[in-house]
Amino acid sequence: MTTGPAFPRRIAHFDLDSFFVAVETARNPALRGKPVLVGHPGGRGVVATASYEARKFGCHSAQPMVQALRLCPQAIVVPPDFEAYSAMSERFHAMLRELSPVVESVGIDEAYVDFTGVGDTPDAARALAERVRTRVREDLGVTVSACIAGSRTTAKVGSDRAKPDGLLEIPPGGDAAFLAPLPIRDLPLVGPKLGEALAAAQVRTIGDAAALDPRWLEQRFGRAGVMLAERARGIDPTPVEGGGRPHRSISREVTFGADVTDLAELRRVLARHAERVGADLRASGKRARTVTLKLRWHDFTTLTRSRTLERPVRATLVLVEAGETMLDEVLHNEGLRPVRLLGLGVTNLVEDVVQLGLDDANPARGVLRDERLDETLDSIRGRFGRGSVRRGLGPGERP
Image 1 (tube, rainbow, N blue to C red):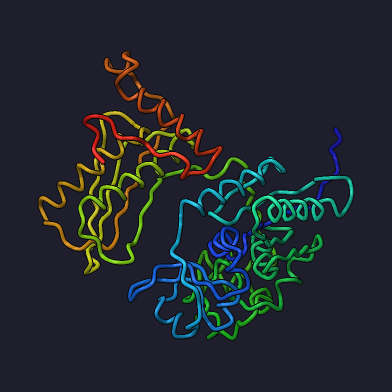
Image 2 (cartoon, rainbow, N blue to C red):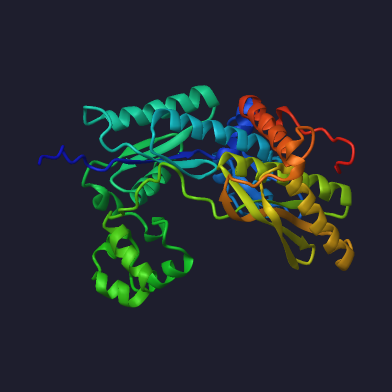
């Protein structure tokens, strides 16, 4: 029995540059080259993304907006438009899937692609990555940084090093040498606490960790130590999951820039969440048995309420009704206080199979009618953008 040649692993990580700012700049070229902060202004606002020009002043994501503006008073603050970001993200990931069958989306602005064995020349993977970058720039108006390496970990670290708008390729067998001089915190698995413990042990670079006895790392840090010993040496056998990782839950939530006490506004936000959650359910071929409401008051007290439905659903209106029922119950029992955060999620996901009821036999009523309408809206939004069409309200339907 003979086998084909063993190709070296070639894993690419693509990461859109300063994504939210990039989308805003593509829509408004006047922002190009200026310090921009995407986020809500005000005392409680947080920076979602800072442009590279703003980062030179010390601004960064997850920073209080007031602090960022103290560092860079001339920064332009742009409120986030998550529908626009989601639409751009969908186009980006669809573009990757057109060029490779093995794509794993791991965030709104990043994905892994397995290029192992592509092409007949040593530079085939790099040529394909450059093709991706060119298409993203020309078709989407934003830039993407990438790294091709022998493992997911090295590719992720390398794409950060390639920013902005760059491409790195680590030669086969060169992962450990590339990682060695980099700070230990560059490894994705090393968080603040582990970083502090490693610094106390004089481990400051990834190469320092690679030089340690793996048994000592395991004894000192347990499973994290085992993974650290492998990743520091450029060893990461984790495959790129071409079908994507299975959903265990789907949710949407928003933290308001200012506390909300308007019940109509809470209902509108809940309806938008239901639309997004329902669309994600339908896209993943799943139904949900349990719907969960998450609500946080102005004093950071957080409440969650869950409702398990009689049969698994994916229709937007059913999700809206379940969410509104739970919201009404909370407000009846707790009273309406200023709301800081509102979220809606689903769990207990099952395959897209449902037993029909008597109402479903009538095409003018029942859950199947709602689902057919949802599918039509999904198709239109897929072609023309998420904001291209909104559901109208019929008799008896709540806003």
